[in-house]
Image (cartoon, rainbow, N blue to C red):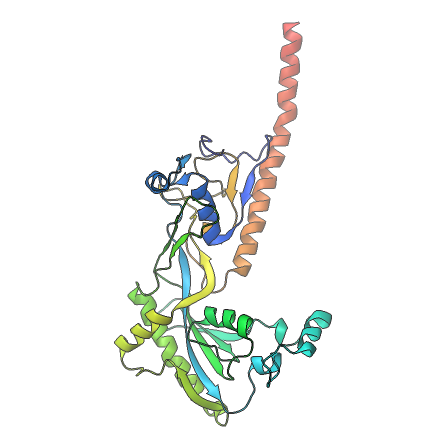
Length: 334
């Protein structure tokens, strides 16, 4: 077990340690299953508390997203390149292009282009990201559209602008649904609970329609697929946002770093109150940067490596001195 460590990470000279790098959903889930978390929550699922850390799973931060979609007047979507038009089957040519050269539409995430904007004057940093997607999903839920493409193949031709609140103020949680490790955790995203986030996304929807109305899209732009609501009606926009918001795939915060009672790891990423256990992923971030988390997570991992190697080097430097003391003590006893 990891309990009873008094907060030490133990990288120096002992039996090593465990680095938990499962992400903002699975890392807190694994800690809870291991008896590290709120004693009340653990007891409700018949799990004994090894370490009392009520902050495990709290402070989940996700960047909510909504989309504006349009049909197009000619087949120029990325899915038109990926799939055969008649059968909807994946094009062998495009598969070969990706396998042999790592290029072509299958090498794209589909949202390679976009920009950052301030949703209102006076902001120190942008709070809104727009991603341009040369395709149209099966629904306004961008995540389920990716799943549908994988299952059913080609989707309708179109174009999409995805609006993302990159500095969300809402907070969610990850908690246990069962003591069974194979059961998924319960996730509360917090979408639609923050007026500030709703205001950012409303402005994103307005800006998206304004951009697609520009002359550059004349001759290509078809009908609006969604949201198809009055952009001057905040209540209608909020209803659309709450019913279609999905993850922009930048989650963190659920094993937050800090020194207060709800912090899960200390500044060296050691799980507080546990021994030989660290969390090294985006779940330790107290807040999110105003964008995607790839570079941030790489930097976090590199920093963790330096911390661990530094502790190990310090432990190895201490070991010879300890051995000399033990040898002198043995000679004195003789």
